[in-house]
Amino acid sequence: MNPLLQKVQEAGVVGAGGAGFPTYMKLDCQVDWVLANGAECEPLLNKDQMLMQHHAKELFGGMQLAMAETGAKYGAVGIKRKHADTIACLELVRPENISLLLMDDVYPAGDEVELVFHATGKRIPAGGLPKEIGVVVNNVESFINVFRAAQGAGVTHTMVTVNGAVQRPYTAWLPVGMAYREAVALAGGATCADPVIVDGGPMMGRVTEDDSKVLTKASSGLLVLPRSGRVAKYKLRTPEDLRRIGKSACDQCGQCTAMCPRSLLGYPVKPHLAMRALQVSGGDNRSFALAAQACCECNLCSMWSCPEGLDPSRVCVTTKQVLREEGRWQTPEQLQAQTVDVHPMREYRGVPTKRLVQRLELTEYAKQEVVFLTDEVSPERVEILLSQHIGKPAEAIVTIGDRVVVGQCIGRAAPESLSAAVHASIDGVVTAVGQSIVIERKTDVNESKTC
Image (cartoon, rainbow, N blue to C red):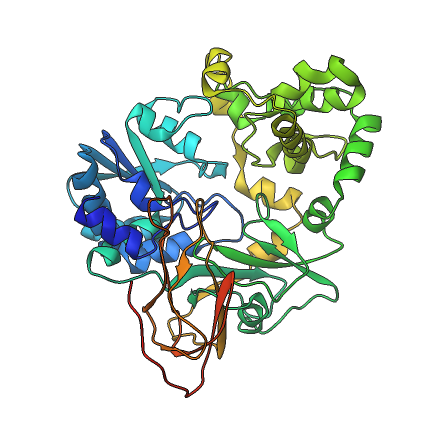
């Protein structure tokens, strides 16, 4: 592994959103394009805007390192044209070899496949990766972390937006391992009687009622929303309920497929056929179930398209689980063979964010001011998971009683594996080591360790 990739792995840089794919592996290829995804199409989040406004030089620095590493000729930052303030900040320091890719304010503009098609006119092969068509895509925060990794700094904080039914919505760098309840308390606490927390955005985020969960390097937003609201009600349905309701109520209108962004790009996904698979049994439903595999789980079919209020997206998710369990998972080659031309009406079927916010019953929260906090946030305790990424968990290199400092490596990447290191996000003493490492602010001192 060359020096930059090794530094990126040792710094623990992973995708700052989604599944947290280790960035060193993404950069281990030769491509034509390096793209930074700053489209941020999930309502109520503005972390990417704050990153680009306050860390533009580091963003471009990380992109240029990535371009040199991969041999890319072209670099671009995907951003919605409505963000005039952010665009102005980027233009002040933008290098000549990186352009700004201006996008419409629609959902899901921030989808990786959508961004790549918008930038290059090429489609990522169904079931494949961007590098197969000469492209590397990373979140803007990941590129900032690449720049810092090149200078020897590990990932200790993540930029997070806390919004929704809270007194003081904010965006800030928060320590990895900080509990959700503390992040919400920093916003003045919940303002609704029976709240839940959405980890991520309202469309693709997951609901949790456990506020003791902790932030990871892939955390991007915490939304406090009422349990009685549309978003929570959809996401809290049990798998049994969504399948039962779908089986009895779906009238096969096809609106879910007609508005599906991936289907419009020609990929072999048809949510209405996945719904039809609920209505037939045995081997007769197998061809219908296969139509779910290429679903990207953007939730547009469920939260926007379906006139019956059903949940085709989660039906696709559960159907994909069944396909894996039954050994019917299709290869990328099989999926690619089913790909068709881009739909001629695709450009007219983008969903405006403002209308989506209204449909989600989030308008009152979208009007709130989200302040950017610059003060350092330093809780008394953090719990840093050893597995915050795709691949093998990091291996702890500290023991109970060790004193650690911010930025110190406490878990090295598993050798000869897809893995990434983890680092202390506060000064303190290690009080527990298992699947996670707990650090508390105490005075017991032992020897520090390095990766």
